[in-house]
Image 1 (spheres, rainbow, N blue to C red):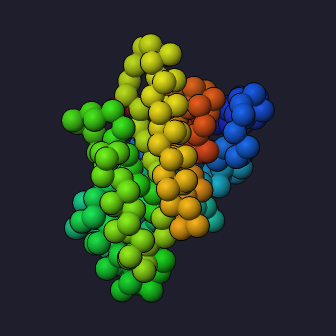
Image 2 (cartoon, helix red, strand yellow):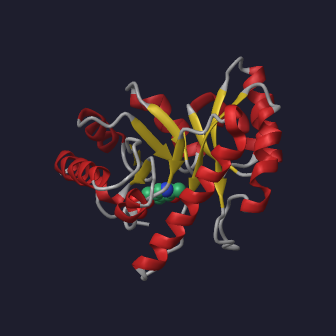
Length: 227
Ligand SMILES: *Cc1c(COP(=O)(O)O)cnc(C)c1O
């Protein structure tokens, strides 16, 4: 079932990509929180090369067990006391949203002799319960991160609100792409942002149409989660 789901998702992504005006290809991150090692291996055997996990502890266990060559992305909120383990496991940390966590990651990456690839998570619509930096503080955080030699900023990450209204959702993704383009323009030759990570199972077609370069899919690949 996982292989068939992936086949259908790939076809959908290819079609949506061909219908939009953005030139970038769309990456697929398989979100494997709560999924077993066996399910993860099935997805990898069916061509998945990027894994997304929400929790450091869960990822740590799976990382030790999986025994497959894949790129690991942290997509859940990160606390400073987990920075060490996060730097040990993850190729990309998508959820950086403060100078504090950036500082902690830079310290750990320095200790481990690693350049840690990161994205900044943006809270575009000011949802109180969500992580992410306010857009008005984004450039300041980017400037701060540019001075941390062991961090490499590669993208922005966004989690859309759960909305019934598709046109409202499209407008929000559109605004997020506009913010991404605006930041790239402002950075000029200092720009290192290659990715705009947005779109999940329920909204990825809209996210791709509006300019996502990376979608994070769990349920679409593995079926509904039980929690
Ligand atoms: C769980 C999760 C996803 C995937 O969710 P689905 O609806 O199962 O596709 C994507 N991004 C983040 C940040 C998540 O926590």
